Length: 136
Image 1 (tube, rainbow, N blue to C red):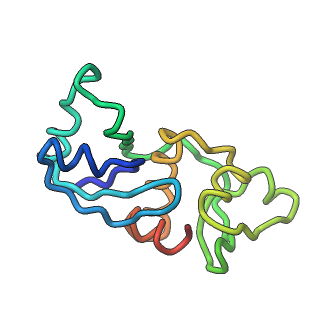
Image 2 (tube, rainbow, N blue to C red; image 1 turned 45 degrees about the vertical axis):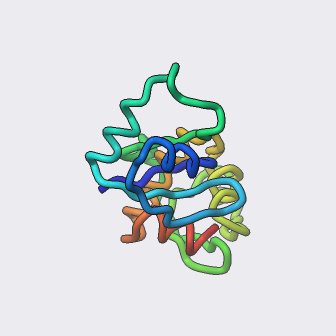
């Protein structure tokens, strides 16, 4: 099973006949859960065959971050995460997950968000979907 970060992937899933479950949908991102074999089908679509209306998706096994691990407050709830820029100045509260990623870690590109949220989910013993549903 894999969880992927996506934007507007619904049409691609439908037209390509991919069996997947959308487990989170927010203003900016979606999280989709799919089997390894369905992931292989999605990943096999060539750039030439990928239509603009299919949106985008990213998958990662995790990031290369190895900063200090700290307890933060994100959306009013405790999150174990990486402390960096703002943490060093005593700022430990963030309005939501994406604000934390951008403001604290400088992570905003989808490929980087996809990588770091895998680490955060592991650190907090939850799925990526649960991470977004709880903190975003």
